[in-house]
Every structure is written in structure tokens, then in C-alpha cells.
Length: 122
Image 1 (cartoon, helix red, strand yellow):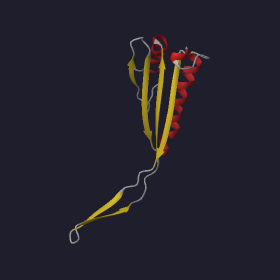
Image 2: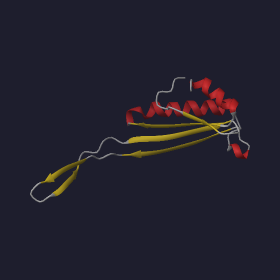
Image 3: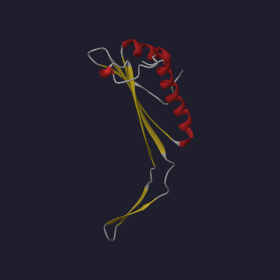
Image 4: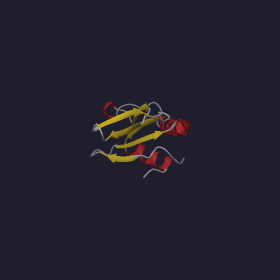
């Protein structure tokens, strides 16, 4: 599956365990597509190694962390008053909310190789 929104960076520790980190920030119109990508990655991982999800240091073969935040950006209209030397501001029209998620998936070398193959990751 091609991932459009989840762009993973990979790192590896001295023991050969790897970590894929992704962050995506989308407008409401893209939320369903991003949700689908998250669902695809995590469903694949659960199907690939069922019943082995858990922290690696506790014997798990793979693990994930999924977090998100929704933010509304409101531009400020700024004006400098030359006569008084003051800066005046007023809130503009808020933009649609953006949802930002982070997804971290970690696992052993075999799991990481299989994840790379399944999603065409570098």
C-alpha cells in the first residue's frame, strides 16, 4: 500500500531493534484518508504478529504509540499606529482545524523488514 500522509523516518538501536516515526498534519478533508493509513499500518502489524504487541523491553515483538492533537489557527490582523507608536491587533477569521498525529512503530529486525516490504518504506 502506498502511504500518502504517513512519511516514516527510521532509526535503529545497537540491538537491531528499529523504530519508524511518522507525523502528519491534515485538514478535515484529509482526515478520513489519514485515518485509513493509520488503520492499514496497525491492522497489518496486528495481523503479521498477532498477540505479540507490547513494549520490546517487556518481551513484545513490536509496539506502537499513537497520539494526536487538533488545533485551530487564528490569524492576527496587526496594524502599527505611527502617531502613538502602538501596535494594534485583532483576531481574524479562524482557519479550519488541523489534526496532527504522530505514529511510532517499533520492532525487531524481522518485523521492520516486513513492515518496509508491506508499505514500501525506506
